[in-house]
Structure formats: structure tokens, C-alpha cells
Amino acid sequence: MRLTFDRVTRDFVTPGGRTYRALDDISFDVRSGAFTAIVGPSGCGKSTLLNIAAGLLPPTAGTVRVGDQPLQGLNRAATYMFQQEGLLPWKTVAENVALGLVLAGTGRAEAHARARDWLARVGLTAFASHYPSQLSGGMRKRAAMAQNWIIDRGIVLMDEPFSALDVHTRQRMEGELLALWESSKKTVVFVTHDLEEAIALADHVVVLSAGPASRIVDQHAVTLERPRDLMELRTAPAFVEVYRAIWAVLRDEVVRSQEASRG
Amino acid sequence: MARSVTFWRIVTGVAVLALWQGLVSANLLDPFFVSRPSAIAVRIATWIQIGTLWGHLATTLEESLLGLLVGAALGISLGFALARAPFVAAVCDPYIKMLNAIPRVVLAPLFLLWLGLGIWSKVALAVTLVFFVMFFSTYQGVRDADPVLVDNVRMLGATERQLVRHVLVPSALTWIFSSLQTSLGFAMVGAVVGEYLGATRGLGYVISQAEGTFDTTGVFAGMTVLAIVVVAASALVTRLERWLLRWKY
Image 1 (spheres, each protein chain N blue to C red):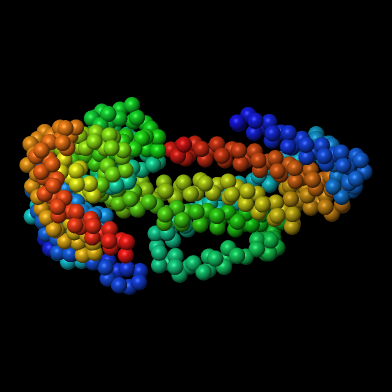
Image 2: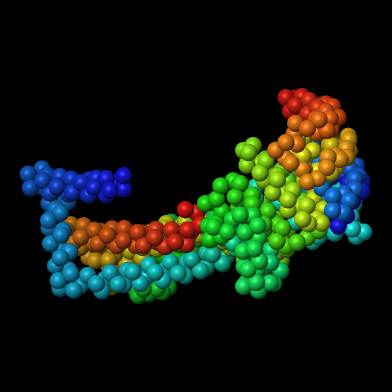
């Protein structure tokens, strides 16, 4: 499923009554089945862009197209994995994973059978009847991934899903995400502030400028071959080359955002 | 840890009672004003023996439970409705605060007048106390539902009704259960105060009768029974709460 941003602008009204422009005239195209990463300094409106793609937030101007259709209301072709997982604390892991199916009216027995399959895929079979509060951070991410992927939609939106994890867990989760994605035909939009993560995962990296009024300052194709070995990739010369090229642009934005936040 | 807590709890209780008894025996305190633990124990034993205690206790418990049920039902449904209708909530806000500010003791004679000396005037008093606790926790619980959970469930395909069922109700329930303890205490306060001011049965009636004859032993015995019942009931509620909110532990 293709996803297109066409001149998307988003303003917010501050509590003081002034208008704050978060995103300014953003246009880009996510090919069907491609893995696109959006990077930018903190506060640049990455999450806002994803909320617009999800249909949780309407753009002030411009349109988002899903396939050929302009998006209206919630994006029913997409799932959304949030920075904090959004697992319901009062449901067990199995109930959480089955939730999307239950909401769609699938019978309990079938929903739970399919949830069991997904729990096996993400290695959580032994934790099916635990509650989210009883899981480690990495396990919660796996449960959230299963919760999202079980409903099988064409587009997967992810908002810094692994940023709260330690480095090693994070690398494992990235590997598991790539394995899942490679066996599917899903379109992924992955927001992160970590350029290494963006390059390691994506086919295409979009760089946003520091806010306010974030624009696209660079778009870069990543042609590293797949499947990628995330353990070795980061030291490969081809990786370093892409990293240097994008960092040259991103660096200025990071500096600008730090200067702005220092006031 | 848990064991030493229990141990020291018992030690504290026994020490206070022993001190009380000792001070009275040594003529440092006048038993006319403060009675004494041994006399209070004997009084309670007598009540149990001649069987008058159970009837009074049953009346008080009946009033409290009815007050708790009715107050909870009203508070939860109105809390939910107003949380889903922000405009109506904003309109009603000052009136709810005004009603909550009324001292309940002032209402008791009115309820006696309207509903008579039977249990319903006490139930009504308990309801006015329980209602607000339940109302505010439900309202807060629905309004405070984590926006990430709401967005996540909507993205997973929930309709408005499913959103209420899977996110808003459970979110409010955690607040409601957490306030059960307070509500139960308030329900008993309502019942006993109502009985105290005008009744023919119940622990509040027993206490007020004893006070009328300067029978301090009777007053303390009534308070002791009440205290034991509250502690037992709140232990039950704690267990219920732990089970209902088991996903938290």
C-alpha cells in the first residue's frame, strides 16, 4: 500500500493564542512495500507527521493519500506502534494480542488461536497469561509488535518504538522487526531520532529540519543489500558512507535545534 | 517483615489497653468518664450473651450496604455520563461542588422528617456521602484514561462503544475500586450518624441510648464493636481490590 504526503502543513495554537507551525509543506512518497525512516532532531514534528498519517490528527493544509484515496478520518489501512506501547494493562498478553481481531468481530476462539501463533512468533508463548506490568521492556515491545501485526494491514507506522530500550535489546528488536517485515509486503514508516537505526533498517531516509516549521531537508536512498546483518552492518564501509552523507545534513539541524532549545 | 508488623501491632494494642486499665485501677482516671477495658469487654460479652448485639449490628450493616450500593450506582452512572459530556459537566460543576459542601449532619434531621425513623433515612444519609466519592473517582477515571491507550485501541479498529468497553470502563474501574475503602467507611458513618440522631435500632442508637444515661461503658462498647466491624470489612475490601486489580501486582 502506497502512502503519499502532498504539501502537508500543520499548525497548532499555543495556550498563549499564537499559531505555532509544526510542519511546513511536507511532500514525499512512500513506495508500496518499502521501509522508510524519518529522522530529525527532537521537537521537529516527526510524531506529528505520523499522527497525520494515522488520521489521528488532520493536517491544516495538504493531503495524505493512501493508495489513490485521500485520507479522511482514521487510517484503516494502517497500524500504529507508539513510543509507549499502548498495551492495555488490565488485559493479559494474549488478550492484548488478540484485541484487534476481537474488535473486528472475530470469534474469541479463533482470535485466541491466532494470538497464540503470534505469541509463538515473537517468543512470548510462556507469557501469554501474564499482564503487561509483569513483562520486561523488550517483551512489551514484542507483545505490541504482535498486537499490531496480527491485524494485517498494508501500512505500519512506528514512532520511536525502541528508543526506551537498552542497546542490546534494541538491536535484537530491530532484527526481529526486519525479519517480520521481510516476510511481509507491508509499507513501513519508522520515525526515529537515531540516524544509525534509520540507516540500518530503511530503504529510504527522510531528514526533517529542526522545528518550528519543519521541512524536508534531505531524502536519501539506502541501497545496502538485504537481508542485513545488524550485528556487523554498522561497521561496514558502505554503511559508514551513507551515514556520513546524511549526517552532514542532519548535524546542522541538530545543532540548530539545540541552540533553539537553549534559547 | 510482615510477621514483625503483626507482632508489633498486637504489642501496641495490648500496651494501650493495659495503660488505660492501669490508670483507672490506680485511681488516676475516673471510670465514670472513661470506663475501663475490662468493663467494656464484659459489656460486649453480655450483649452477645443476651443476644441484643446481633439485631443492632445487622440493622447498621443493612443500612450501610444499601447506602453503599445505591450511592455507588448513582455516583458511577452520573460520573460516567458527565465525563462523556464535557459541556453538561461544565454547567453542573458549581452545583455539584455546592451539594458536596453541605455538612451531612445538617441533612440528617431532614431525612428523618422525610423518610421516617426506619432504615431509609439512614440509607439516604449514607448515599449522600458515598455518592460524591464514587462520582468524583468515576469522573476522574474516565477523564484520565491514558490517551495513548485510547489512540492505540482506536487504531486497532475500535468503535466508540468498544472504546468505552475496553478502555474507558476499565480505566474508571481502577479508580472506583481504589475508592471502595473510603466509600465503605463513609457508608457506615452515614448509617451510624443517622441512627444516633433518631432511630429505634442499630449501633448508633445503642451509643446514643448509653450516652443519654451517662453510661460511658456502653458508649465505648458500641464504638468498639463498630471499630471491629470496620476493620474486618476493610480487610475484605482489600482482598477484593487485590483480586479485581490483580493486573497491577
